[in-house]
Structures are given as structure tokens and as C-alpha cells.
Length: 180
Image 1 (cartoon, rainbow, N blue to C red):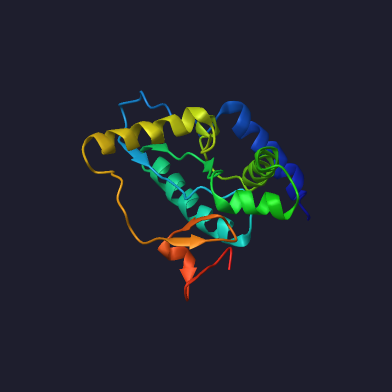
Image 2 (image 1 turned 90 degrees about the vertical axis):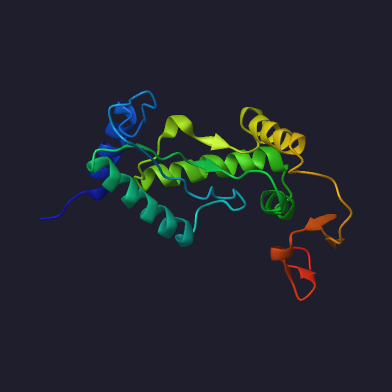
């Protein structure tokens, strides 16, 4: 006896979305809170790869287990849309980074929903959204006020091909991994 898995998946994904099954009520103090945060994928490709799925499966299983144990679980998803990976991917494909990144995010969202991950989709974020990055700017200014973020003269890894500084972790044998 065969099953039409696509039909079954589509049915339940629609139910989950319509009922906001994984929406977190942050004002529900009747249950202990549990927060699960995934590394946001870089929309620097047209789709997710198996490494994304591997990592997100583990955190999804943890989120589901904690819900079954009675926790009020917040499991958001977002996209790390700033930075070189997204910009370089757009340039490589002769596209404007803004719209191209948004297009890639749309595809990532479809893929993540089809995989059935239990994210709170009402809390989806994009790091290039002004309503998101205003808070990273705010916290940076608070750190600066306390002397924890400051300007200094230091040796940096400048990559002429990229026209920017690379982090130490992005440099191998004195060369930028992305720019050469």
C-alpha cells in the first residue's frame, strides 16, 4: 500500500501554518521558557544544502522535545543577509545584491517550510532589515558608551580583490579565502 507523501506533507504543512502551531506566546508565564537559536543561513546561494538540513534537524528535534516536556519554546529563524557571502554571490551572478538576496531568502523559506521545521515564522528576521539592525546598532553604541567597543590602530588583513578587511578566520596562508 503506497502513500502519497507529497499530499500528506502539503496537508499538514498547511494545517501548521494556518493554526500557527509553532507560534510562541512570550506572555505565557505558566510554562518554563526555552530558547533555541540556529545559525542564520547566508542567502549566498539559490538554495539550502545538506549541511543546513543536518544542523536544523538537530535543533528542531530539541525544540520538539522541549515542547513535549512542557516548555514554552521560542525557535525563530532568520537570514544573515549582510556581508560578503551574499554580496559576492550576487556579483558572481551579475545581479543586484538587494533583490537577489531577497529572492534567495524566498527560496530558502519555501525549502525550510517544506522540510517541516518547527520555527516560529511570525518572528522570522533578516539582518538587513532596518527593524533588525537598528538593535545591533543600538547595542554597539551601548558597548561604546561603556568603553567596550572602541577605535584603535591595529594590523588587519586587507584583501585588495574584495576591497575590504577579512577576519583572521577568513585568512589561510596569508590570503583571503574568498578574494585570494
